[in-house]
Image (cartoon, rainbow, N blue to C red; front, side, top):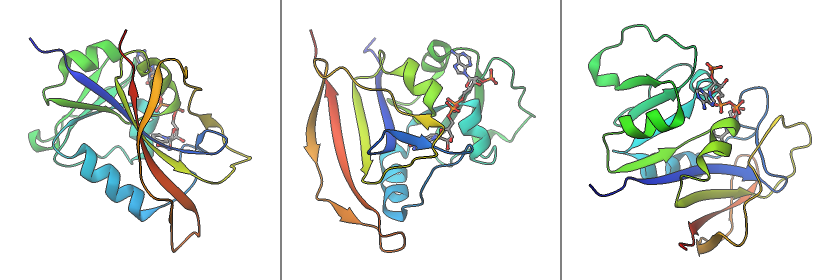
Amino acid sequence: MKPKEISIIVALSDNRAIGRGNKMPWHIAEDMKFFKKTTMGGTVIMGRKTWESLGCKALPHRQNIVVSRSLQLEPVSDDLQVTVARTLEEAVEAATADSIFVIGGGEIYRQAISLATRIYMTKVHTYISDADTFFPELDSDLWMEVLWSEIQRDAESGLEFEFVLLKKLSD
Ligand SMILES: NC(=O)c1ccc[n+]([C@@H]2O[C@H](COP(=O)([O-])OP(=O)(O)OC[C@H]3O[C@@H](n4cnc5c(N)ncnc54)[C@H](OP(=O)(O)O)[C@@H]3O)[C@@H](O)[C@H]2O)c1
């Protein structure tokens, strides 16, 4: 069987912040659009806190897997496609789509880096001084930036951002 390809998708600031008070520190419509387009039809794997930050609502048209040692999901209708896995490895096993996206948050990213082969990274060019959740530093011997977008500016917030794709170098 072909091994499943695991990608991380994340938006981080210049000081690697990804969250504050269990929310994203910004709202960038173009980044939300990119996230939706990239993950559509795939399996999304997230930590329990990220699930709660989404209002405990499944992302439509994607298989949603929440990683938690404690969460008991209420029975939900089949079309919502939400399940709970007790470990990240169990979540990967349970994924049915060809493309698997680890969508956060910090705790889950830290564990997923060794399993992932690509990272869709939105670099948001700002400094979030009161962030409480961060994306880990990457080993530059292992990860290489292979694609970059132009730097864009969010009209509402004025924030500048760019999309970067990183690939893990194989041995
Ligand atoms: N900027 C971005 O791209 C982005 C993306 C996603 C999230 N975020 C932000 O990230 C923050 C949330 O991140 P977080 O680090 O606090 O939490 P998280 O990673 O979303 O969830 C942590 C929870 O996941 C479960 N978990 C973690 N490792 C596990 C394992 N090995 N086995 C079983 N369960 C495991 C535990 O749930 P239990 O306690 O239930 O066992 C743990 O409390 C929020 O601020 C959110 O907005 C940002």
